[in-house]
Image (cartoon, one colour):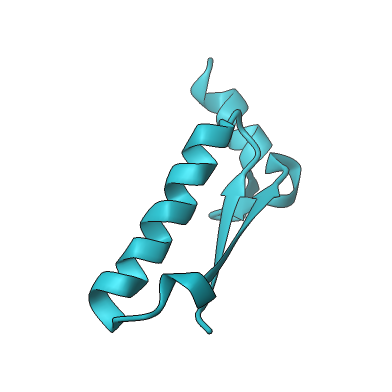
Length: 68
């Protein structure tokens, strides 16, 4: 049973976008590894930008810099 864990920041991702990610990840495993889609698990974790860092900086601060 394949298990895929997608982690994204919680920045206005729609239910449709999440559904598309789940469908796409499942189909990728079917296409590449011939896995059964009925036993493929996809979990999406949305992480606050306060809890995500890139290059030693909190993403919330990086986003604030981008808007200046």
